[in-house]
Length: 336
Image 1 (cartoon, rainbow, N blue to C red):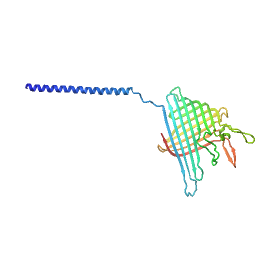
Image 2 (cartoon, rainbow, N blue to C red):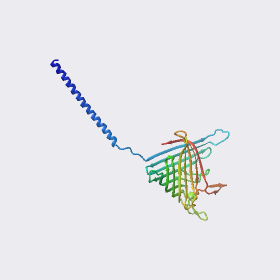
Image 3 (cartoon, rainbow, N blue to C red):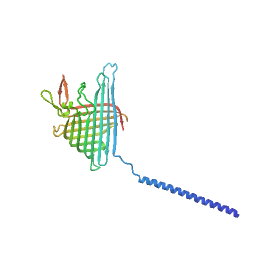
Image 4 (cartoon, rainbow, N blue to C red):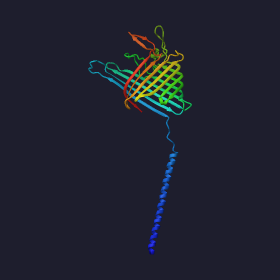
């Protein structure tokens, strides 16, 4: 091999070695950069704060139920009619290890129109319920609780066919319950039982005409022997007594859910032991996510509500009686 050939081979080996070293250095720098990026990403994951967990849950249900019957040249006879009911339930609940705060707004309003008869109201409910509870142990189902309930209606009510003299109006009556007690909450069965030995019940009749009549248990107006007004009736009545409530919701069959709500109240000073009852029982029958049927009853007994019966133009006070309302409907329901 000549000297020239040896020189060329040596130069080639030297260039190759330098190039490999440069590539190795460049690769090492890239690896270092990538490693630094991975370390920074891991540090970001480790040091970043977890998302805040909300203790609030929301539930909103809006629905419309419609029933209709129509007759055209029907030989057996009949009256065409249509009934519509709008309803809603809005819930806002807070819960942590030791506290619960449940808030619920319930409303219903229904109308009926029959052929040849004026538009009539079939249902009218506005209720607001709020209960706060505190427990000393996260494992206990018993809470020290305070409860607030408010109940009234949207529009005037009549004893049809008389539509000139309302027998009830917004805030006439309106009922307020405010008390303290203990509540048992069992979430798996959706069971709530509340007992209060000290509850204030306020009955408001803010319409003076109804208050003067002594409607819903308020003190009525005083008149002299000639029928002249001496003093107006009072617009409110306050009582203190015992309140017990319960609520249970259970799926008794596939797509059939039964809801029961019971309220019992007795006053310490006025006829203690006479119990006012408000019992509601409803069954929801689910057709699909939007179409549902519901059937239910509402039984009420209140010794402050007298039943007035009219015979031959004479009004007869029959005293307090059991009141019963039955509901059956199918319609559209949207939950969000």
